[in-house]
Length: 230
Ligand code: SAM
Image (cartoon, rainbow, N blue to C red; front, side):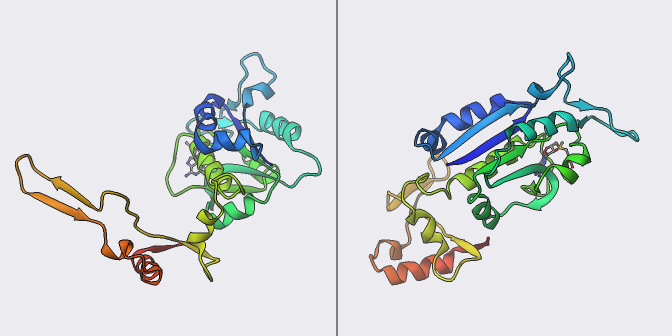
């Protein structure tokens, strides 16, 4: 079982996320455990503050180190393979290859930033890696965290049913990436009308996909697919 511990000031955002679909099933099967912890539980002042003004001035507020430090100390399981991850747009860009590495851990502790970011001493002393999900700035680390949890979870044996689902796109000799290709399902011909009263047009499925010829189908997938770097 892999344990995901999320540190956030909005734990309720994770309620629907963990209660639906494959993640819910995986938790029932005890393949993973996802807990969203409220960072305010590790504060000591009466207002449960997790942020303060930045030293040196500047706009906005910065998340304090103390609650994060205490939470990580409490949650980190001794003797287990674990990684503490901070979400920040400055971090390493998250990739499928990283997801494979993370899926081999026993525990992942995620720190979701808010406001103008997190006291730099967290990045320097507490976390093992800083992750970004792209060159844009979100309001908080919760959405990146969900993206990483979904990507890692589907690599855990048993979570997405058949392991072939994962293997198919990796293919032989493609250790460093995976193939994403166009997919179709019924009907074979879809009749569409782009304007009211206009001429009907048929949108057809490529014939080769219905040919039953596996070699041709594989060639078609390679030709029309795109290799995504791992
Ligand atoms: N300048 C701040 C920084 O560098 O962290 C941006 C703060 S942003 C408004 C608030 C939080 O959202 C960040 O602390 C981080 O946890 C999260 N975040 C925003 N964009 C992100 C991205 N592209 N990847 C990962 N986390 C992101």
